[in-house]
Image 1 (tube, rainbow, N blue to C red):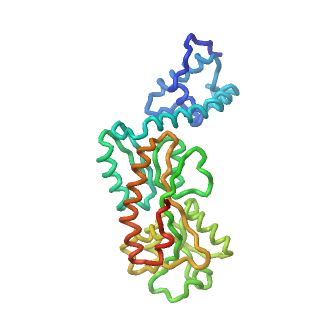
Image 2 (image 1 turned 135 degrees about the vertical axis):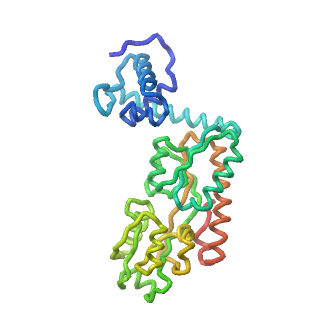
Image 3 (image 1 turned 135 degrees about the horizontal axis):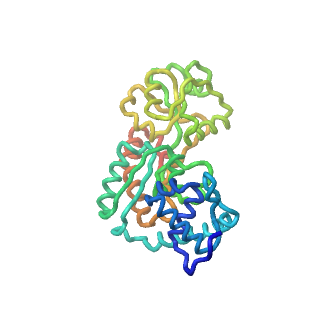
Length: 324
């Protein structure tokens, strides 16, 4: 057992590395996430154990596991670390000039027009800041936020609680039905499965797919399908080719401009439903940076999404809206 050290004060870095190691289970994983060498991580953890005079990890096990005392220590410090991060974020509010590193994750729904313009805007307003931009699915972006690999994410809001993350609802994006423009069947017959036109769906590991499937189950609709895909553009290409129909959203439909002449978008028949897109952040993300991203995203969405779609498809004005 480690012997008590003469040190009196715990080091915040030790506590943060201990928390990460408890989550990841290996020194290599902590090294990859923090950029510190394995030997440095090991040195900090040893200092913490020496300071406390207890063994926090079963070092001979792979992955590393916490001892009972380590588990108790983790439970007791997690709230304190959360409070410290929140206090740091509040203290830095308004201090944009000193921002040094920002990691932003987004879904591909915004990557053609909005995110490139957001990147240019942030670069001009945070002159001392280095940036990392990552595009992925909503559930991956949220997981990266939970693992502190990102600071801010623009994602579809999941059905489950975000727990340790903060979210700012941004856009209400209603679900719509997209048919081939040369389709000869009625909308109701297609959606209710009374035609031979198959349903082309999003991959079931995506948040959007789970929302669509849940609504269809609530309506008692069972649809035959022969194609599943994680990419909206591919779904639109398949529908444009006349091979089936799909359920998507106006935001995603607007990204398929090359296929729009071969597609028609319709209100979802019966009870409408929508997804919410939100800005999600870690608790220690600066409020001033969140406000900056939030305000600019709203301006860009209005310019590139709402105004064009409300003009071309007036029935969307009441359902495709920013969330105040």
